[in-house]
Image (tube, rainbow, N blue to C red; front, side, top):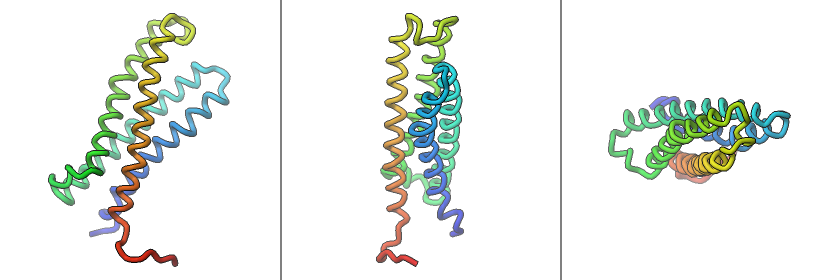
Length: 161
């Protein structure tokens, strides 16, 4: 087994979860804090969240393809792989189910900003659902990274060099 083969799942999973956390916990709040126009902050954050989603879809696909090639289909029923499936599913629901609803509400509100329109309540509710789904994905990502770490931790006593 090559080092790449052994470490690829950990790298792609950590990259994905790191992107989720960085975007949701650092970048988006910072955009809303430093940009004077909330609509602009939302537009920039929306584009970046889409990039994180596609990053996740790529990483999740690589993670799964690696598992199939290395362990066969029987490994895919393990809890770690089921968590990654849930993360992929939630990413798809967020991007292709909830985001189009939010975009449509913004379109309907034009020329007003959605939060200045009669669609404010609907937008807030759908945005809350999308945010909750994103936070669940962040939490699942944490669980997946910990499980992946445990799966690859040496069984002997820990040593420091």
